[in-house]
Image (cartoon, rainbow, N blue to C red):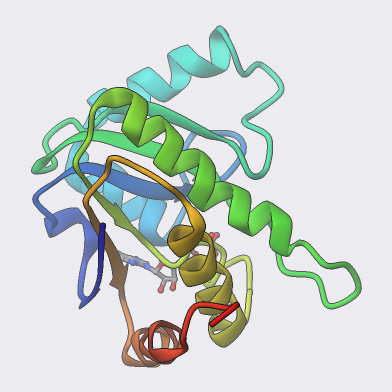
Length: 174
Ligand code: ADP
């Protein structure tokens, strides 16, 4: 399994799975969610609405993941996951880790070989990039998966640099 960092826009990635940092409503938002729906077209939202009407009437819980078509994106599926809102008072790192783990588990179930992740929770949900990057890299490194190409697509130099530092750290236990 290889992990790569890309500075850029996740909607341009040619991969099997694009992961979306969605919100629990699944009905669209700003940031990466807005970009995915804009670029991917109405088919994605239609499937999200259907999921709301069937399995997720109360919304998709934080830390979980669900798949839809990728619409017009150059990908096969979008996996929507809901990151935790950052809290200085409460440790929610397990929930953030769960987003990466559950997304990869679902990607594997779909038969995906390549997955592109955004930096979940580092935008509107305010998670400090340095810490979010450590959680993301540690979690992905700790998963055994048939997905062989894992990319983090970072939208700003600052978040890219944080992931670069996290990746340079040796895996814990070494
Ligand atoms: P959250 O609500 O989980 O914080 P956001 O979409 O607000 O989600 O932000 C998550 C990260 O995605 C931020 O680092 C933001 O800069 C980044 N981002 C925004 N648009 C894109 C895009 N088109 N491709 C990749 N990353 C993006």
